[in-house]
Each structure stands twice: as structure tokens, then as C-alpha cells.
Amino acid sequence: MDDFYESASSSDGPQLSSIYRLSPSFSAVLTLLLAPFAIAIATRLLSGRPSEKVSGRNERTVFLLPYSIPVIGHAFSFLYDPINLMIQARNKTPHGIFALYLGSTTHNVISDPALVTSVMAQRESVVEFAPIAWNIVQKWFGFPKSSKTKYEACWREFNMTFNHLMKEPYLSQLLKPTIRNLEENIPQMISFTDSEIDQQPWERWAKTSFVSDSESELNLMSLTRDMMGHASVPAIFGRALMEKYPNILHDVYDLDSGFYFFLMGLPAWTPWPGVMTAHVGRHQTGEALGDLQRALDALVDGKPIDPSWGELDDVSGFIMERHAIFKNNGFEINERGDISILWASVANANIFVYWHLLFILSTPGLVDRIREEVAGAKDEHEAGRGAGPFVTVTKPLSIGSISESPKLEISHEGLLKKCPLLKSTYLESLRMTDQPWSVRKVAQDVVIKGDKKDLSSPSFLIHKGEYITIPHDLHMRDPKYFKDPEKFDPERFLVQNGDGTLSANAKTIRPFGGGPSMCQGRALAEAECLALVAGVLVFWDIEPADKNAGWVIPKQVKTTAISKPAHDTRVRIKRRRFDWGA
Ligand code: HEM
Image (cartoon, rainbow, N blue to C red; front, side, top):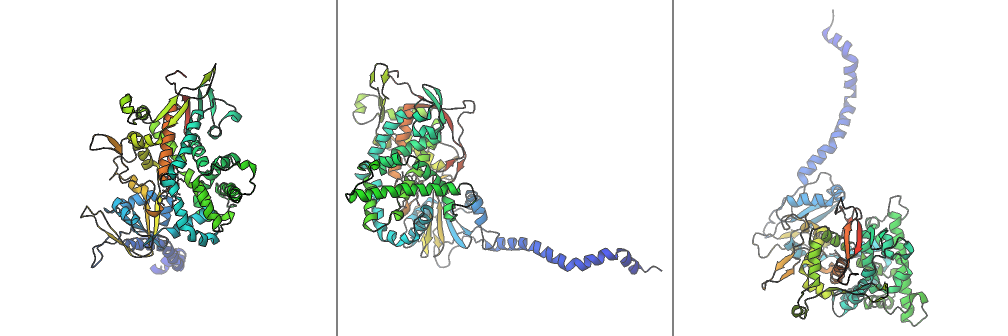
């Protein structure tokens, strides 16, 4: 007789028993597979922290966005796409402040302008910037770690030298040669030749091709980036530096591209694209500037100088003052950190002029409106009161059929003070392309105050040991403050004054950061960028090379401040026809 149980076990026995035998390991595997999900779910449920009133006080705690991976927190999502993560977090709280947990450190991210103002007003002893700055600068520019004490001892003196960039009469001493270089170079921007030997250095980098004796085709970003550098670097460091080291601008661009590699401490031999190039760029820039420092040592000691340096009498007071601090305080040549100054003077302004021009060129009718504005008042009575023109082109001297280039004159004061539309497009281009971040370490518990005029705007308590991160672009692209933030609106920053006149007002944007670390070159940057953009627009006609495609605005690639375009813009450039028919 068949035993029901027996027969069942004998026929199905082998499979069932093997499953039974496997089951402990099977359940272990299952546990191993499910555990990460269980941990992730539990972490997600437990990690988030709402913003709550601190008991017995008026302030609130900061909302912490929940995360799924213990210890690591938001680090992966942050590295992958920081802006997307921050936009999501910002949209989950009404206050414009939230916290992210990035590999064991809490970063309080702020986009609300009133809270940002409150952070920027804190003392260095409460929210520290200097240790972070040293850490970044040391890794990035490769200063010897042992130089820290010397830099700390001279920190104040170095900061004082920034007066040359910000205050009169020093600022004009730097601006004068910069504008003069632009006045010289803009009329000679295009040489209308295919022969590389006869082309200007900026044309060669811009891959210029000859179209006719009045038209060339080339890459706009490469062109304008180098044009700016050829105006500002000789004005700051003297002409001889770029004559002796003609590739120095591109060495700095390579160094700039390696920012994240240097922060991660990747050595030159790392098998990753761009790492070696960045190291070579940094090395060559350092060699060139070291050479300049040695020449300046000889100059001030009255010793013979390599004749290829010339007289060195056009090196700016800014660089001479920094040189004196280096020399008098025993900084070795490899410790003298003017690589940071050279980088700061070209990295952002040079790319920015490309974006500014591109936005103007691609907005129908705007080039004409700007040309009209910089031409100033037409009637003599108004002109007598200093109402322009702010950019003039005058007839060249000609002998027979040979003539000089037309003469260009630029009044940067006029562009700054009397051209609100140009200035508004400048601010709007900064808003659209600038992505600077300010980071502070909280040294003592601190209260960050909301908008004093808005009683519903709360204040927040931030704890010692945490970080405050201010990605200024989060605010500059926030639809709550800027309607259609992805759209270039030339008039966004125009305001009407009481007397009916227009002016441009930066409102709540902070394209140059804020507080003690704020860009010290902002006044210089504004004047030189407006001068280049206005000068080029008045002197040249620029069209997209591919007329069918029209103007294409490239995607932005994040850098330390002004983003880079994902690709260059090919354009056709012609000299404009002026009244005398040239
Ligand atoms: C459009 C052009 C420029 C932009 C958008 C820009 C932006 C910035 C930003 C965002 C910072 C850091 C601010 C922070 O950490 O809060 C900075 C620092 C700095 N910038 Fe600029 N910058 C520009 C042009 C220039 C120029 C032409 C110079 C001239 C030398 C310059 C000199 C400096 C210096 C010296 C610092 C360091 C300040 C310090 O650490 O004390 N910048 N810039």
C-alpha cells in the first residue's frame, strides 16, 4: 500500500529535501540581499529632521533632507548632480535653508538672500573662512605646506594689497593700461589672413579661417577669452611676461580645468584625461612667475636683469607691493603665490566676456540698442554734460591706398555710469552663467537671522563644527526671485529712478561671493568686461557661421565661478562700415 506521506516524500523528496537543506544559506543570502534595502529604508525614515523651534529660544533648527546611506549621507547624489539635489531640497522647505549630510559633515546650505547677508556679516572668529581658503589654495596652486606660517604672518599685509584692485587712485592705475591695450587690440582683432604667422595670437587659438579680405570665420569663445587676457595680464604683470611666455594664458586655463583633480590630490601620472595637462599647466605657470619674481628681486637689488625682461617699469604697483612682502619676509621663489593672482585675473573675466557677447548677439535687436546707448547723446548740449559717446571710432590716417587701423577710444567711466542697458545685460549674463559657492566653517554656535523687515522670516541656530555652504547660483536661478530664470532678459536689472532716468541695480544677486572672501577684483572685472564687450560690438559685426542654425547657446559646464561652454561658437566676423566708408 502506498503510504501517502512516504510516496510523496519518495517522489518529490529529492527536491524538497534539497530546498530544505539549502534553506539556511538561502535565507542568509536573502538576508544579505535585503539588508541594504532595509538599512536604506530605516536610514531614510530616521535620518530626516524637520525644522523645529529650539526649545526656550526664538530660533529654529535647520531642516535636514533625509538620506538613505548611513555615514555617506547625500555625498553620492551631491557629487553626481549637486544643483539638482539642492533644488529638490530647497523646494521642500519654505525658508531657503536646509542641511545636507556629506560623509560625516553637516552642510547648512543657504539660498535665502537675507540669511546669506546675515552669514556674510558674521565675524571670522564665528564663521571661519581663512582655514578653508588656505586648504584650497595650498592644494590647488601647489604651495609648499610649510609656507603656511609665513602666509599667516603676512595675511593682513597681502589683503591690504587688494586696495590696488578696489580703491582709487590705484584702480585707475591698473585700468588705464588695460583699457589702452583693448583700444589697441580690438581694431587689430582680425587680420584677414589665412597665414598663421601673420595672425594675431588670439586668432590662432580661435582657429581662424580666411573668408575674404574683410571677413573671417573663427571660434568666439577662444577669441574673446584671449583678447581679455592680452589686455589684463600685461597691465598687471608687465608686458614682458606674456612676451617671454606666450602660452601662459593657456597654461592657466589648463591649471583651471584641473581644480577638482588638485583638490583630490591626484598626482600627475594619474591615468585620467586632463590630469597630466593640468599639472603641466600649473608647473609652467609657476616657472614663468618664478622667473618674474627672480627678475624683480634683481631689479630692486640693483643687480643685472636678463635683458629679455626689459626695464620691468610697467609691472603694476599691485605686483610690486606683493613682491616686496614676499622678499622682505623671506618667501622662497617657489613659495611666492602670485599664481593665485594670475589665475583670479583671467579665469572668470575671460570666459565671461564670451557669454556676455553671445547673449547680446543672440537677442534680436539688442546689438543695435547697445550701440545706440554707448554712442551717447547726439545733441551737443547734452554731450557737453558728459553724455557720450563712450566708445568712439575715428578715421585712420591714410597715405595713398595704405591706411592705419581706425582709432578706438573707450571711456570705461561712461560705460559704467551712463549705460544702464549694457550694465543690466552684464548683470543678467552673470546671473545666468556664474556659479560661485562660498563655504564657511562654524567655529561657535551661531544664530543666522532672517529678514528683519519680514516678521514671518525666522532665524536659525547652526552648531559649532558644521559648515555653511552658499551656492549663489541656487538663488540667482530661483523662480521665486527671478521670473523665467533660464531666459536671458536684458532689462531684468533695469530700475527707474525718481527723476525718470534708468539705472541698473544688482538687487539680490551675489556673482562675486560675499563677506571677507568676496572677489577683490570685481570693480576691475566690471570695467574691463564692459570695455571689451562695448568695444567689440562697436567695431565689429558678428554673425553665426551657420546661418541656418542661427545662434546656439551652449550648455554650461560648472567651474569655480563663471561656467565654461560645452562647445565653442563658430562665428563670421566683419569690420563694420563707418561714416567715412572704410
Ligand atoms: C567676471 C569676473 C569675475 C568673477 C565672476 C569673479 C568671482 C570671484 C569669486 C566668486 C570669488 C570668491 C568669492 C568667495 O569665496 O566668496 C573671487 C575671488 C577673488 N577674485 Fe574674482 N572674479 C572675477 C574677476 C576677477 C578679476 C579680474 C580679478 C583681478 C585680479 C579678481 C580677483 C579676485 C581675488 C584676488 C579673489 C580672492 C579674494 C580673497 O580670497 O580674499 N577676480 N572672484
